[in-house]
Image (tube, rainbow, N blue to C red; front, top):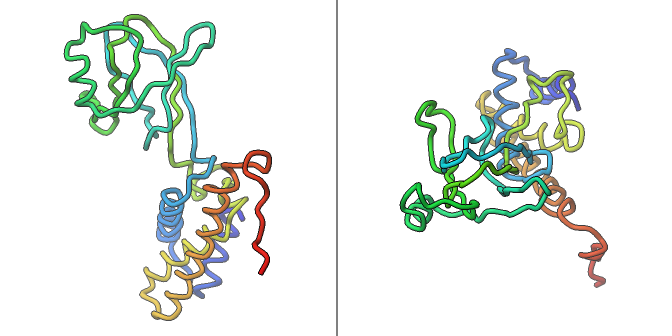
Length: 218
């Protein structure tokens, strides 16, 4: 389901025409709820960078929300994954910037002093050389309301949860009847269960290691 089809379906279900700005708000709010309920692989992104000698801070990507993993690697491709810790652990373990070496730990330090809207990591010990860094992280993909062509992974592969999530937002805006609100909310939750089965279940296992699903015989 692309953007045009989604807008048409919402208008048809609610028998109402909404201003484009309001319609886009419904859809974006639904996307945000879904993305924070199911960890689809399409929400995973990775970037590479490098540390700075004698500097314990690494800038976060501008679209960063949370980390899956951080690793440093050498020119030979040997990866060393860092352990996620609190900032106070790193400060206590390496109390001075002169405690240098290959990083072993990382933490989300807080806002960038030069740009409070962005975040930075702190690593410990302080890098004693330039190390390549690979970060896997959670981000919000571009909304179906703005993406070129009006197509996203969610719209193409699991439009049911997107449609009913947007309908809940639209009907809340309309201050609709309680029974219809309950119906849409119930349909959304049903679709969300199926989405979680896919994103948090099927896409994280295979038949070789986990075995095929078997329905108990009664």
